[in-house]
Image 1: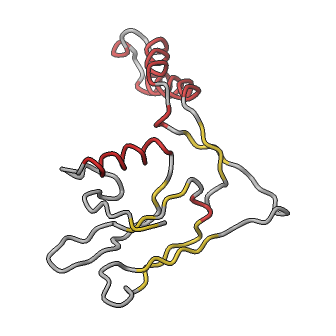
Image 2: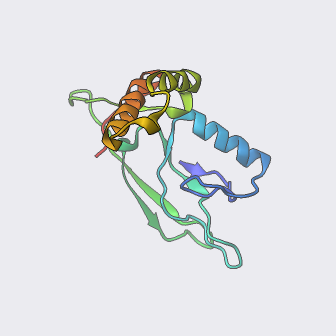
Length: 156
């Protein structure tokens, strides 16, 4: 959680247009890290500037953050105050882990090879669209084995 001061970055991540080199480095690091950014509203408002997400909450376990509330700025600050409620589990509590795909660390060469080997040479010759979909769906599910996973706590 902190004031990252990357005003050019738009959340959720989208094409932000021109970004400074340090903003580009941050985005590359963020995508590779498998973290999630949980702030869903602008945190900085200044007259004459567009609102922006400067203050971020990054986590690898989104279920640890029960809520994020935006509070009024302190003094003359142009940043809202973020109040994050963290939900911790004691050692005695039963923990269940979930697994999610980390597409940033997938082996796309193996995925492409697998998909190409499983698809018919000419899918247009098939008579049934449902059959085509089932073939593609099965190929994609099979290709998931080439994507690394991340283990974490279940989301609420």
